[in-house]
Amino acid sequence: MKTETPNRHQNLTQGIPDGYWDAIGFPPRCVMMSSGLGPASAALIRFLEKRCDSLVYLDLSYPAARQIRQTLRQSETSYIIADPLKSPLRHGHFDLAISFWSAHHSPDLKKLLAEIFRIISPGGQLLLVDGLDRKGTPAQELHRQIHQLSIALDQASNRSHGNLMSPSELIELVQAAGFRELKNQVITDSAKALDAKMTEALRDEIMRVLTKVYPQDLSHIQGGRSRYGKRLAKLTRNLESSPLELHPYVVLHARKPTHSKILPGFNNAVIRQEAAESVRRYRGNSLRKPNGYKLRFRDLPAEFKPREKMVMNGPESLKNHELLAVLLGSGTTRENVIELSKRLIKEYGSRAIAQERSVRRLKETLGIGTKKACQIVAAFELGRRFFEEPRKKTPVILAAEDAYEYLKEMAKFTREHFRGLYLNTRGRVIRDEIISIGSLNMSVVHPREVFLPAVEFSAAAVILAHNHPSGDPTPSDEDLVITQQMVDAGRVMNIEVFDHIIIGDESYVSLQREGKLTGTEDS
Image (cartoon, rainbow, N blue to C red; front, side, top):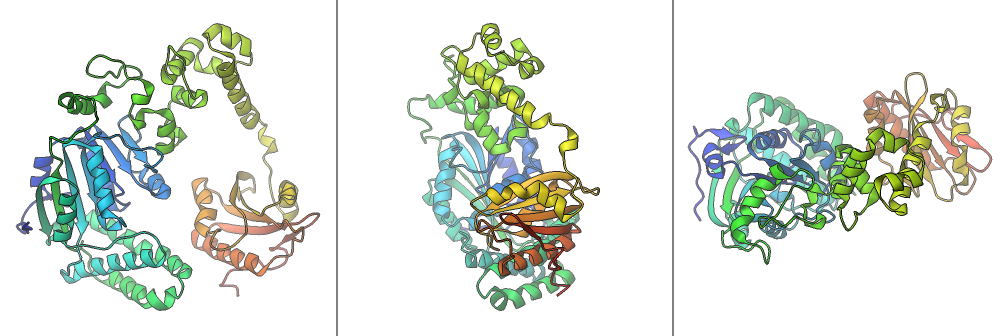
């Protein structure tokens, strides 16, 4: 198939020719497949939220899903799925699937396209945008070389990753997956793909990756600095002094044939209408199949089920009745779990049910069984015991003795626990977090895991601690190396590492007191 190159003056919206958006229209249900976290992806998400009734962002990476949550609004029509294997998408559920600069990330693009074909409805559309292994202007070539370095580091780190492809290779794979009506264009004039603000944001993000992320990756790759160090330094210098544009990329639009089956036993003529209207019509138990049959709970899309929604978006995205539904687990023969939870809160009141301590009274008032009444009373009692403790019990740690007194229970642990105490400016513990369990080494304990809670809870300082199950608190060489690494990272982030406490049977060692709390700058 011939690949068209657009006129240099063609208008682009989100880097995609306007003619493609005219062909796509306003599809009700859209899904973005692992499309990265850059500013262009974020802008496309915001654009699609206005264009589609329902938008799902699908990513295999939990950190990526957490980060993208800052861009994708959480509502009844927008969701994030971090693990599609645990929350499988329904067959024929979407009208548009988008792969945006991510096809080359897939180690098996053929399998990814087959999954996209499965989840979109007959007549549904695929929009695939991906970089090409093609040289362009000097500004574009800089971006391509950075892209190639990213791929090389991923592959050297044994992270699954494909390669940049040619348009003909992509077209062949899309056709093999069953898509038809292919239209594609190669964008070589990418200067108009991003506005000045977005280009600057892209430059800042790439600079952050080159200076903060990739140097850490090199330290975990055997011979990484000798193999990639000079290349990384050169690209960093070039990025500081040279303009940057997206390297040539392809925009590919295709459709799933309208005669494709969706679900056996369903009327295909009404499926698309249901797909377009179900999100807007869904309010509790109001969703119906076209023949008037009331959908059972198991028939609902995964994004409407409280447990799956919690996996996708986290507990904060659930309403009170949905949290109660997760707690109850199942409904009754008369009510599904969502209907039951709504009725319990409506009839009893959310505040009253949280304060109820009598299983008998709850059973009699709401007409539920002993098991569900006990689950409700036990859950709220547990919450009271955890969160109604006086504030004065939150310790203030000003010295190693205070930290040991708070942490000495760790001496009983039979496995190594690496723990972080996050302090405010007055030394009060505002977060106590177990960072890892098991042998302490650099591959397990990464500065990212240590300082993420510090950033999240605005901590001014952190005290690190771990136990030695052997009972001897003498620090090992590995302990000292990890401590040095954490101190260096804390200085970069302006978060002080106050101490590293190593706990034994009846004693402890404070690396700060021993004069071993030093970074590379102090060595």
